[in-house]
Length: 132
Image (cartoon, rainbow, N blue to C red):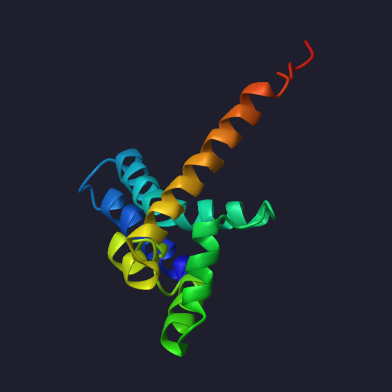
């Protein structure tokens, strides 16, 4: 799905640049911005899963809730395949429907802890210098 969307956005950028509707560099910049806006949330989610960290309490609640009905499981699988935007899953309305306000608060707190620990780890990492 995303490859088709990206190809369509790129084709539109090239066509608008070649037709003279906008400069080609501006058309490519717009394509890049739109592509990143569409793909960054799922890329971030994939990178988080790839870290193989134990899910937070809020994430456990969300995954448990998603497994309760076929409709919600299919919805989540749609997110994983790119057929459903992850923003739709992580919208406050959907999260509250699945795990309530308390669960939403747990998700936010878990993400804040993860962000802090990532920031602390990055700050503690030694700086690598390229040889001259």
